[in-house]
Image (tube, rainbow, N blue to C red):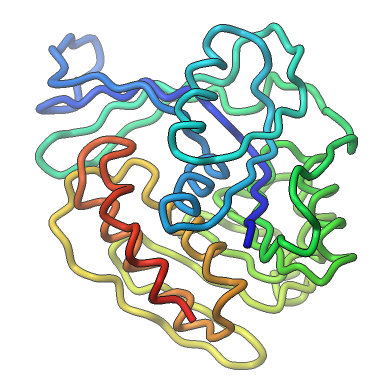
Length: 286
């Protein structure tokens, strides 16, 4: 089965350092890696690593930097649908610094702010009946709405990666089945359930993940691990959740699975070294 993921793709330049530099300070990095990044993109890499079929709808274009991201995603087994392949401007670039001893990171990114709307003209390179879930991150608003409406018409569950409030969410939230929010996400009134979202989940790093659905609520503990790299851990969590949604309908079970995958990610240094460690985890989702 295929998970359809729609949203941001960046080129991440990741430097590992002994300590994050203070303002005005220069430091020597311990390593430098370049990889594709962004919420939907990292989630797509996760789906593929777990053994699923991942199709990413995004904007990359024809700039030489875009080729770096495209090659990385191809190596990860992610199918890319570029919604603006003739675009000559560079893709969004993220400058990432990861502290060596605990994996904490800083990120400076342009995100999708400079990318124009691309309309609803996209085609799915797989049969519609093969799509088990959709994930949107809201970074390309018109794309997120188009994909969510497409999924709603076909009873395909829609997962929202809600990292921060975006104006498109006023229209998007009524189309969402699961809103998976970061602890920093705050929506203006009314609340997410009142806006039509059946299931709301909130992550908070190593703290328990809270959820509410159909009048029930609870929390699921996060495994305690020695963190080596937290870059993209939340995106990995969302990708694992989207992978499991079409296979499991128990909310605590979905969260527990996503927690385990994200915990495995933070054990490993670098944007891709963790992928081989999670390959067997996807077999356990029922």
